[in-house]
Length: 78
Image (cartoon, rainbow, N blue to C red; front, side):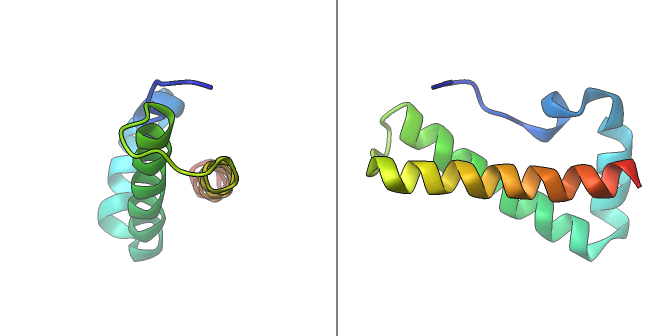
């Protein structure tokens, strides 16, 4: 369990400029970015017990974060 937020700029540091460009030019990317941010924050709050959740829900949040990160990576690497 990690208590460090997984911000996209930290996850993909060499793509920080492309992340910014896609957020402003692609509504789909912006939506994925916002969803990732919301899920990532929920995972972080669960991990730090700020907002404790059932282990099953925390696992589902992590799966959602991974799915979103994979979709974002696909767009960044295209």
